[in-house]
Amino acid sequence: MENRASDSDSTDIESLSSEDNDNTDKAKGGKIRIQRGIHWCGVDDDAPTTSPPITWPPSNPSANWRQLRPARLGNPLHGTKLQLFSKTKHHLAVYPDSVVKGNPDDNDLHTFLEIISAGYPGHVRIKGLLTNLYLAMDKKGRLYGEPDMNEDNTIFIESFRGSYNTYLSLKYAHLGWYVGIKKSGKFKRGPRTKYGQKAIMFLPRRSRFQ
Image 1 (cartoon, rainbow, N blue to C red):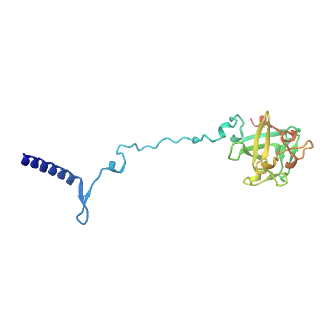
Image 2: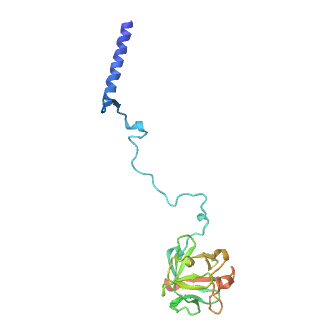
Image 3: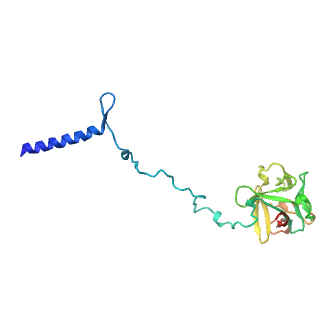
């Protein structure tokens, strides 16, 4: 019985050694190196090579962009051409000498404007189509035409109040300075503007550009 057990043990050892010889390789120096399958590294041979689909924008439960008003026809993100008619009966106009004022004549080409997205929802730039100057507000709250659109004082926050729009200077938003036109047609300085005034309310007119 002991001889039979020893014979079976030797047979098993020989079979194991023969399998090991198939999975081993001699390295330099005579050392035996075991060849391992790719599954040993935690990699699946049959793993799919395609990447998962990318969704945009990424889900973010804390994002507040979902609370914004939905886009509509003539949204400034599309680069709208229009005239801005103030509640004081003047069209906002940008002239070649950088003067910004109101003009009751809707045929004045300097009143033809374009509202361009400034990158974030509600952030816009207002450009005079004829002069290629951008509406800007200086540190004293005065409006003027700025040739460089990259200046931070050319960005305004557009808000909707019924049929009217208001434009709050992004740079001076903490001071509450709005774009405004007086009854005389002159611009209203930022420190004298206040939310709810007629001077800061503008009616977008797009009929000429449709």
